[in-house]
Length: 368
Length: 164
Image (cartoon, rainbow over all chains, first blue to last red; front, side, top):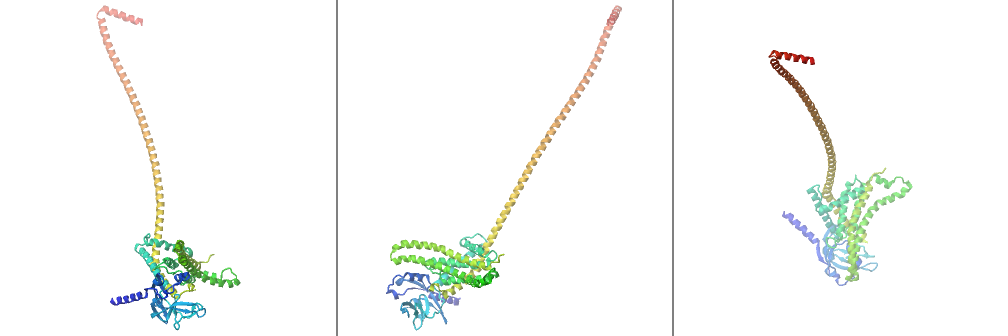
């Protein structure tokens, strides 16, 4: 018992250490920079090793996240070793442009953080060439802002769905109450209007779990992304890595559930003469991949665009340095936010619906 | 540029977490929820079917009831009609019988009366004859008390006979 407790304490302390709150270093406080819209928006839209909470420069408060690197061996430390490390500037070898980055100290010794990417230092330096560092990058498996947001989102989904499931386990086949009343129509919508409608009466059952999971994963993370503060604010579903993975799932499902009819339509489309098939087959093969790629880009672009528009509208106030602009930018940002609520549902629907459509095309039986 | 370049770390975590989520939800959420919902749907469908069936049965029953009621009504009407006819017949019969009986009684009474009358008349005649004889005897006895009177009577009788 005590051994277990000690182990638990150790792990807990370790986790506590990995997530540490901190104030941004005052190192670059001396040179007050102009408000850079592009930088601000990109910073919010992209992944980071910290979760910025409020304030900036002198009084910025951030949650620093754990960094996990694999560079011959696993290295785990808090990102504050970068953010509270040495702020250094270096010249580009070709253009002469000056870049600033964080040089890690302590456990992060030998690594540097530039634009939220971790590089291995070579002779204590980053070699910039035409705006890009040419240093080696260790495999970065850090719990970044997006990964933490992913954990929070998945935790929420599990919480919601398991409590819904508990309701049915407890009460059997009764009319829904409480959270089940809200969730059930969505589940039924995915099952009946997305899966059954696009895949077909006889084969849809196998794909419902994936479609449901994808739908709620996208929906909840879209919605979380719209919450401006912790636990929201990360641009998870607007990150190409996440949409890439989801699209890959659909691709794998489509390819592996493709029946004879599906493959014949790709490699030997009935009624097409052989000389034309020589042109058609490569196009059809490309077509297998363009569909999930379109899925990937659609979700990524829609969600990222929504974040960018809202941030740009709010930035109007800071660009013009006048609070009077809020009379215009706040209503517009509010309008876009409401639009984004719709988009959050729409994109979750579109992704699942199109996935179901592609799967449906792959399992479709031959028509006579 | 790195906005549209996938990040291996996030890709790894997304894959791991999504697969775990898919597994957990499929096992502990979607299965019980969909089972319950589909079972309920079936239950509702069955209940609806049963309601439809029951309604049809009810309608059939109602129609049958109405039919039976109608039949009963017509039967009742027929019965009443028959009864009335019988009653009428009975009354008529009784009336006729009574009439005949009455005439019979009257007739027999008449016969008896006439018989009695005849008897009475005969009796009366007999009595009268008796009285007449006795009177005549008396008269004759008185008339024959003397010779003269016998002569006068004889004359008178002879006169009467002549006159006749």
